Amino acid sequence: KKIVIVGGVAGGATTAARLRRLDEQAEIIMFERGEYISFANCGLPYYIGGAIAERDALLVQTVESMSEKFNLDIRIQSEVIAINREQKTVTVKHLPTGETYEESYDYLVLSPGASPIKPNIPGIEEASNVFTLRNIPDTDRIKAHVDEKKPKKAVVIGGGFIGVEMVENLWERGIDVTLVEMAKQIMAPVDYEMAAILHQHIKDKGVRLILEDGVAAFEQQGKIVRLQSGTTLEADMVVLAIGVKPENELAKQAGLAIGERGGIQVNECLQTSDPSIYAIGDAIEVIDYINGQPTHIPLAWPANRQGRIVADHINGRNVRYNGTLGTAIAKVFDMTVAATGNNEKTLQRLGIQYEALHIHPNSHASYYPGAFPIALKLLFDRKTGRIFGAQAVGYDGVDKRIDVMATAIKGGMTVFDLPDLELAYAPPYSSAKDPVNMAGYVAT
Ligand code: FAD
Image (tube, rainbow, N blue to C red):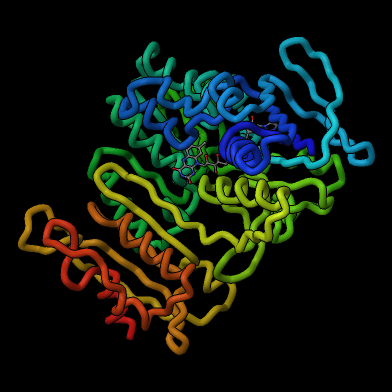
């Protein structure tokens, strides 16, 4: 069989590798518009900040290494510009030459990702210091600007994961940073009171935080950012991180079903409305694991998981994608924020009855040095004990607790099971009653 993959990073590369492991004979062609495949998107902010020193470390696989290891036909700088469903071919444009050609497929896998939202803000075209961050060339541009122009003031617009990571990494470079967020809180996956802890922390670091305000215009080639409130900010550079939108043009043009939020619609086996075309990753609409509603959750775990499932399904395995929980984590200077499942905002919006509890147990035994309280929030159904979601903010041990909660949810456990989780304990790591156990005790 012949499988064509569109997109050579998280979802695409995973699919290709798994396909080869399952079938030595299959013909596998992977098209990537850019110059790089399988790079570490998630590491990009840390390379700009300096925590990741070597650019090469971001390049998880090269075309040469991956082609050889998995016997793949990888074509970079090759954009798939049309899907011809009747003929089962794609039209490919080789970008350096502009040449186009057709390639046939038995199965087509779309993993084109999502692109940064860049609204048509007045003055944006003339502003050469406004950046978005998605890939290696974006990273090179931002890093070169920081290294060569030595900006003193930066404005980051958008307080989501990428925005907040960029705030920290520009701050690490000695830049005076202002973070502007349209909502009343940063980090939308957690609820307001959890985000408020982070607001204080980033302000304590000397970052100026402006909430409930958005950018209205860029003036003087982007040297001045004018906000909707009328506030003006000086900026030697601006990072626009206000979200991403699924790259759905190919799918749309091919007449595949697209959801309300722009994600390509797929079934449980990740097939689009055309069963020989699969779609995965940031480009698709997924089902929220908790509430069953369609949503868009652009994260690396789903892209990887889905890539593997698609390869398995193409090879006749009986596999399903069960929906996305949205487990996510970010470092915010010295603190960590993480969440899994639904937050209170979502539950309220959907009219789901829930109980919320907050506890502040120590990250490990209080008598062992370095223990800090973790703000842990649990959302659950009082009657059935079903866990809807959990959120945590703290200095240490946040990742572990949210991962245990995420595991409990997928394992179908209820709050009644949490006290019974027998978790590893010694004073440097936890307490005889772990924070997850404590949440269970308080809930029941
Ligand atoms: P991508 O990895 O974006 O790959 C899509 C590729 O398809 C692109 O390279 C694109 O050039 C190519 N393409 C698109 N259209 C075509 C076409 N027509 N022809 C050929 N090629 C095409 N997630 C986390 O879970 N944790 C994190 O810490 C985290 N940090 C992140 C930090 C940054 C700065 C960014 C940008 C993302 C981060 N993410 C993180 C998100 C994560 O990287 C994505 O969820 C994941 O990469 C999605 O995989 P994908 O395969 O759907 O898309």
